[in-house]
Image (cartoon, rainbow, N blue to C red; front, side, top):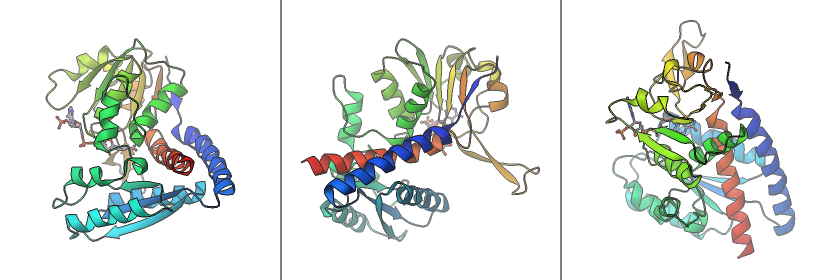
Length: 293
Ligand code: NAP
């Protein structure tokens, strides 16, 4: 069996075109563009790259973006002040605080300071709480796990009644992904660094979301035939055959897994493009909600 390859770029490009259309319609109706404020603290190259990609995507989609770059030495008060300014700015409808932040900044305090109406990253404890509670609906959900759910839906799989295994329990990917799968009525197992036999858990899974940051960790013979594999992992490994000397791989051994799985994402070009798309989608939604108030 050879898996359906889930092309995140294609899904994202279709969704981004729709978002651009809706953003243009929003501007026509309201006289201003949806706006995203992006706070970056420090000079971490990976964070700088993610922020650049998000700003470029905003431009393509017709979303106004404002950059607030603070030095790595910024104090907690300075970061909170930047959040407050964006909270108060009527041209800004969504606020993104790029994580991780330097050690002197308490992330929870900063994320809690983001206005609930502008929490387009879905990291405010109230939004995460609503995601975790039965019968509650968060206003916004985190971009990467929401993108994973879009890709599962894209291959026509309904998580209801399925066994799902999430590898990783981080606040930004693993934990919210597991909560979303529970909301979608899957039976969910979360694996992490203290899980004794991850292979045995994966073997039972109809759906796997892998987000541990370990190159090619999940082996082909762990995969249940026909399973849907969403690989969030983004790992840089040496590759002398590539002119750059490196390449990006996921947490799943793609070549082996694709022979067994029913559907599988590629890395790069799988979940990554959806992460940015969901941020744009949440920003548009935030602008529409605020304009309607
Ligand atoms: P993280 O905060 O470092 O969390 C990693 C999680 O994996 C933790 O829960 C950890 O367990 C678990 N883990 C680590 N090593 C493990 C092992 N050997 N066996 C079992 N569990 C293990 O990472 P993250 O921010 O969630 O990111 C995960 C991966 O996704 C990274 O490769 C990252 O680059 C990628 N990512 C991609 C996107 C995208 O848009 N494509 C977005 C975000 C992240 P403990 O909790 O026990 O420590």
